[in-house]
Figure 1 (cartoon, rainbow, N blue to C red):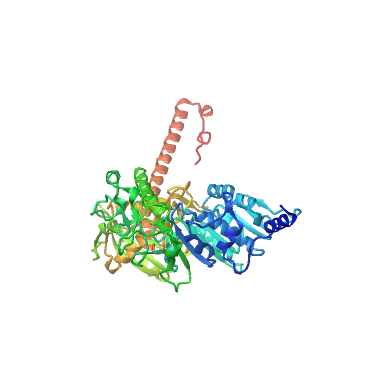
Figure 2 (cartoon, rainbow, N blue to C red):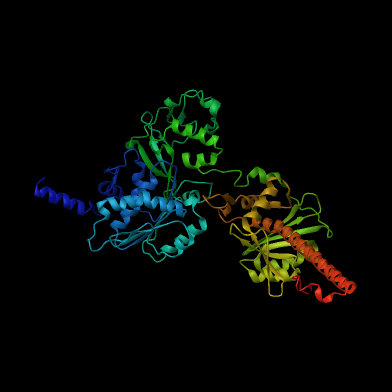
Length: 582
């Protein structure tokens, strides 16, 4: 090699190929490598537009095995390189994932690519598992903890696996962008449930879909895993849902010759030709940007692969995972969310029944600007909710007073927060029949903890949130409670009862999360049911204390009688020595 060629080679290594007009995808191709070869989007052309899209509010639903984590890492690092003096956050759901991704995917790129190592020898950049300095910009890699979400200010934020991240922590991340002039936030995730996490964000976006044009009839298709788009020799003609394929059906299928077809003419679609593919938004006028990457965005995920994955997940009894990861679709898991049929099964009539003043009644109150109140009759083998009220917060005190005059309310619960003084006032006015309840979100929280003041009076109850909601869902599913008197509120009640989803995150206990926040009657029912447990708990404690006191008094009387009979007062242990005080 000549001196001139050597000089050019060193110059090319030192200065990255870049220009203001260069798209991010072209920059990544020109300056990064994969397996010792220049990075390429071949076979994954759908990634190019997502990588080039620098929209400030972007959400991507994705299936697995399509390389999006790889390109978003490169996009994140390239943005740090191409923008002066910024901070970026790349978040993952937990420490295990963050450490694995940082060690095996981010660190090798940062260490091996010349473009990220153009610095003076005396100015060695800061490089650690959770922090990567590139020139004068810094990239923070985090594991989805509260401290991560409250201690770092940022200009750009990439949230990977949104649905596996604690949604409350994810919301906290948004505050980290408040001081920036850029405020870019982009989220990527396999979905979990409808209207939750990434699915909710995508539904609010312009909703890009990756279409494919048929070369035979020019029809634009949005290929998905349904009989309209999938041709499998040997598939029964009456099978309308491909998820019903089981080992017996699969045995008669010719999966090697299966293909994705045009829904209009039935011709095979050329999924690998980028000239026939195009991202098209459903709602182009919306401000938020969204992309849905389905398995047929690339020709590499075949019908054969999807069917074999289906059979494998069926053997593992994990159909939700198949929908979420293989198809990239949200799943309405009956075990995780109350279904419409389950709710309708306990709805026994719109009319409000008569409840006499001698029948015991329980009350539950979810407090907000509009308070939601439910009343249940306890006079039959199966309790039934007979009234559903929506009351302005400034009228709640008087409404409950009127209800107590009308009904024999023997137990009640309401949330302590956000209006603790009002909750305490109602507690005192009801002689502690209506007890304030504070949700405890810690997995180790006890089902019931009595919180007392300095005079040993119970001020409120702290209870495990997941346990309270589990109990309500169990009663509805097992039809141990009936609903009546809802009138025109039937649809509202059903909406509220479907707004909570039981999510199980990796290495974390299950928890119920909100979808939209319209869940008020759900919580009112929870407070009502839990109030009965609280009163039983308090009564049980009172009975134990009475028995213990009776035993103490009996023991004292026995000791005194023995002392008198034996005349050995000085040699017997006194009650204080036994650990008893009075």
